[in-house]
Image (tube, rainbow, N blue to C red; front, side, top):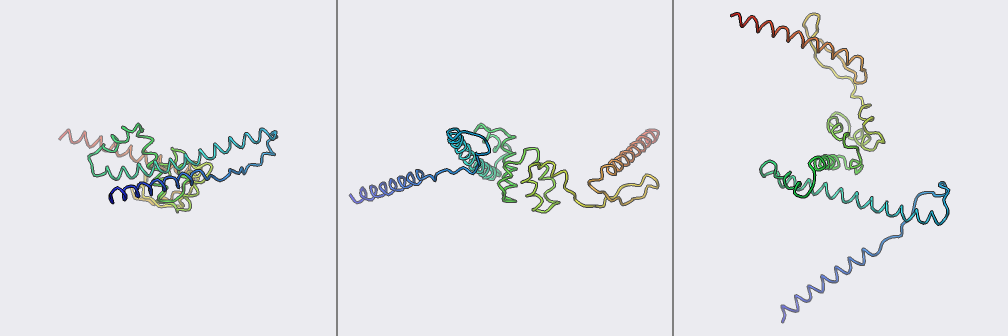
Length: 219
């Protein structure tokens, strides 16, 4: 009898918790538009209808954003769990869920950047910008990365970032000595000139290798 009473008590407690959650879900704050509809030359009835549409869009977007964050987090956790298994297990798993490889790994890249820079805007950055950010993030400050993420034109922002001047070593075509060349990232003409020098240098190497090959054959 005592066992039944305890079970009934637990069930009742669980029911009360469920009902409490339901009540909490039902208490939804009234939606308030932040748009000034007087600028749109609409009738009052139209404005009311548009505000309802706006509410649906905003709430759906918020829900979608949360779902995307949860999905990225879930995929990242699953990838770690599958890491100790044989290669391809993780891919087999997410493909069995109907997810495409490109979509999954793009989302994982976003999740990685999100965890590193704590900015949800990373989930809105165009897909082709993500690898560019990953390539340069070690060479720029976190503030600059966040600026790119929040930019209306992040790809242009990436292109415009200057790394300052840096020194590389290249063969001097005149006397075969090594000369130090300062490259300024935004100086496209200078870059083109250096690329031409490099191409000329490699052509000379190919010529030398060709001559060596002929001489070795004669031996």
